[in-house]
Amino acid sequence: MRDDATAGDAPAPDDTPDDGPWAPDDAGRRETVAERLDRNWNELLQELRVTQTGAQVLTGFLLTVPFQQRFGRLDDLEVVTYLVLVALSTTATGLLVAPVSLHRYLFRRRLKRETVVLGHRLARLGLLALGLTIVGCVFFLFDVVVSVAAGAVAGGVALCGLIGLWVVLPWSVARRSPGSTPAPF
Image (cartoon, rainbow, N blue to C red; front, top):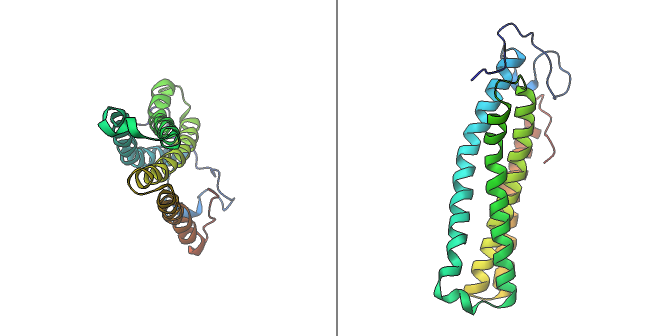
């Protein structure tokens, strides 16, 4: 997996605050920049495996909705909501799969840092698109089954829940950790 790293790379600070050659979250680790990049890439790939599957299943489900008998009875708001959800889920899937394509294209070009940084950014954007898709699906489902008002409430609850779990919780843990600087979302 060390396609562009050499064993003799000297340790150097990464994008974290300057606390010497080792990042605060890597306390106690003695790894070169290349080793850290390899580890970061592998961790990102593990995270992407989970999110890619969820995004792909959600997109596949949305693509089958028009073939249901009840689809023809949707009102204008529901049709627009559905089309926005298809666009969002497709975007989420594209963003979450993009790091793989990026890696394939940049493989063996000695651009591991760029691959890791851009892969991280694409994954974050993909999570944002996936979160919006999930919230929109909750709204859509409650709107179709109950009412627009129920959809708005359920979508709002889903939005608050995802913000709490995906943003506030990690930020709060990082904030309480000694020597850690929480990254802005």
